Each structure stands twice: as structure tokens, then as C-alpha cells.
Amino acid sequence: MRFPRAFLVYLFFSSLGFLILLTNIKVPTSRYLAWRNLILHLYSPALWSARNFALDNLNLPKEVIELLAARRENEVLKKNILEYENKVAAYDALAAENDFLRRVAALAPRPGYAFIAAEVVMRDPAGWSLSCLISKGADAGVKKNSAAIVLKNGRFVLAGKVVEVFDSTSEVMLLTNPLFAVPAVVSDSGAEGLIEHISERALALNYPSFLSAPPGSEVVVGATSRIFPPGILIGRVMDNRGRISVLPEFTRLPSSKMVIIVRK
Image (tube, rainbow, N blue to C red; front, side, top):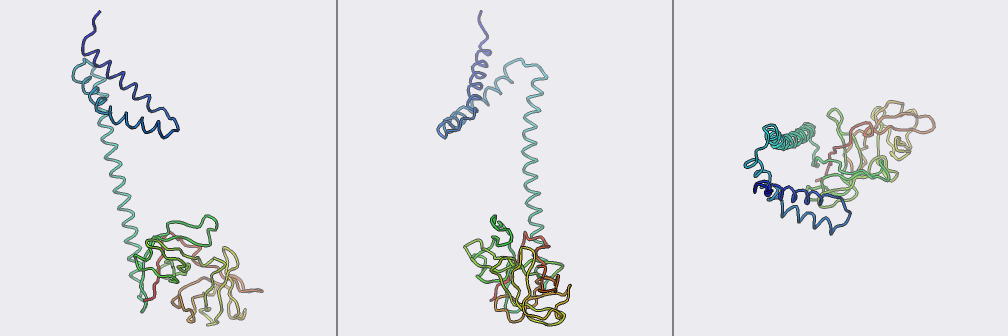
């Protein structure tokens, strides 16, 4: 019994496709993966030719042909949808960044300082409240000991300071780091003190009298600071019994974006 030539050719291509399918078996060796990828690359034209040969020369049922056509169309649509979703994600990210920059630009400029918007790209896994890495560095003009802030209702809130500057990134020591300290003043009374660490969620305002720092009072950066512009919000007094404890405002805000204030 002689088989039609078309059947033999299709059988050859089908067998070839089955052999290549076997190369998808997961074997955790780099040598096997290299050979598998080479074979797939060399025989991909043959698989494409086999499919087209079958459609053009074999009397396939109408349903099979429609199914193959629908599958091909589905692959094209999936690719188009993926490209569209990527464009939408990129647009949303750009719109969010533009909105953030507009809010920064709307604030009254401080003489002698420059603003640099940045994103937080990594937090310290060993100490979430200790430090973070931002997306701007020396290339963007970031300098060591620059103030790192976040925004709240059009107002700057102190988050930390830059302690290391690299080419395209910088490390920020957060306000809740035990090594962080900043001169501060109670807005209502004008009492001056020094903000220091208590815990991940609380700071201590040392030296002022308890009566000068009632609960709820705003605490801002003092005029004696050599690093931070005065008046930036630090937090509010939580308690003044035995020790003046301050709740840092930035821990209550989203911290995925920061503004670096660089002294010119």
C-alpha cells in the first residue's frame, strides 16, 4: 500500500515537530538548554512550513481550518493587548510623575535651594525604618547631607537626609534612624530642642520644658539647622509626661516619592 506523497511529507513534519516538542522537557543543565534552544531556532522554519503545507495541500475539515485561523488571530490579539497594556501603564506612570512634579513646583521656592524629585527604589530589608535608596544621584545634582522630604497637602514633611551619593542613585537615612538628629522648634511656643530617636514610630524632643510642648503641637525644623531649611514639618507632640515624644509625620504618608532639597 502506497501512501500519498503529501501524507508522507506531513508525517515527516509532524514527527519533526514531535521531536522538537521533546526538547521542552525541563532538564536543569545549561548544556542541555543551549542545545535545546539551538534546535528550536534551526527548526522553527520547518514547523512554520509544516503548518502552512497542511493548510494548503491537505483536505482538512473546515472546523480544523477555522480553529487554526482563530488561534492565529487570537495570538495576534494577545500581542496587541499586551502592547496596549504596556502603553497604558507607561502613560499612568508618566501622569503620576507629572502630577507630583506640579505639586512640587507649586510650592513657594526657597532661596538658595534646588528641588529634585525622586522615587524610592529600595528599602533596607534589615531595617525598614533606617534607610532607603532613591532613583536620583550625582547625575541629577543630588549632594550629600541634602534634606529628603515628602509632600502633604502642599507642604514639605521631613523624611531624612542623603548620606551617600552614587552616579544615578542615593542613600537616604530616614528620620526614624537612631543616628538621626535635627534641631527643632515647637511652632506654638517657639521652644527649641533637639529631635532624637526613641523607636520606629516615635521621636524625642529634648531640652524644652514640658509646658512649652503640649500634645498636638507642631514640631518643625529649627533655624539653627545647618542642613535642613527651617520650618519643614517634623511631626506633632504625642505626649509630654516624663518626656516629650513626637509622632513623625512622614511615617503616616506614602513614601514612594521624595523631594531632595539641595543647597546651591
